[in-house]
Amino acid sequence: MIELRTPGEIDAMRAAGAVVADVHAAVQALAAPGVRLTQLDAVARDVLADAGATSPFLGYAPAATTPPFPGVVCLSVNDVALHGIPTPEELEDGDLLSVDAGATLDGWVGDAARTYPIGTPRPEDLRLVDTTERALAAGIAAATVGNRIGDVSAAIGAVGRAGGCGINLDQGGHGVGRTMHEAPHVPNDGRPGRGLRLRAGLVIAIEPWFLAGGSDDYRVDADGWTLRSADGSRAAHVEHTVAVTEDGPRILTAPR
Image (cartoon, rainbow, N blue to C red):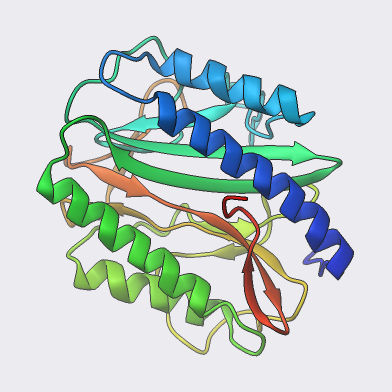
C-alpha cells in the first residue's frame, strides 16, 4: 500500500531527517585515515541517543535467512557499494567511504547516504561522486506532482549512463514513512512517463548508487549484507528522503 502523508506528518518526518543529517555530520567529521569503522558507528549511536532517536538499520532483517544488521549505519568502503557492516577495519588514505544512515524519531523515519574520499582524494573518485550527486539532484528535480516514478528513474539513469557508470536495478530508492522500506520501489534507471503518478504527500528515498567500472553486476559477501561491485571497481551511493509537495520536492534529510 502506498500512503500519502499530511503536511504535519511531513514536518514530523523532517524532524527525523534532521537527525539523520546530524549523524552524517558527526561521522564525516571523524572519518579519517586510521579511524576504525566501529568508531564511526559508535559516534552515530551517540548522536541518535542524544536526539532520542533510534536506528532503523540496527537489527534489520528483510528475510528470515538474513542475519540482523549489527550496526546503526552502513559503512561501505571502495568496492563495497551498499550495506557495509561496521567492522574494526581502519580507514586508509585514499579510501572512498559511503555512509548510509537512518533515524526513527516519534515513529517517523528519515534515510540518507553520502560518499566522500578519506584523506587524499583520487580524481577518478571525485568524478564518480560528482556523477552520483548530479544524478541525485536530477532525480529530486523530477519528483514533482504529475510526473511518474519512471521520470525520476530516467533522470537518474541518464546522468549515470552518460558518466559511464554501472547501474543495477535490484536495489534502489523506496517509499519512506513509519518504516524504512515502503512502496513504491524507485529504480535508478527507467523510461520516462511510466509507473506510478506522483501525488502530493508521497515521500520517497531517492538513492543512486553507481559502479565506476561500467558493469551493472555485483556480488554479496558471505555475511549476507556486504554488496560489492563484481569487477572490483569503486562505488558511490548518495541519497535523500524527499517529499513530493504542491510547491515542489522537499528534501527532508538536508542539514539543519
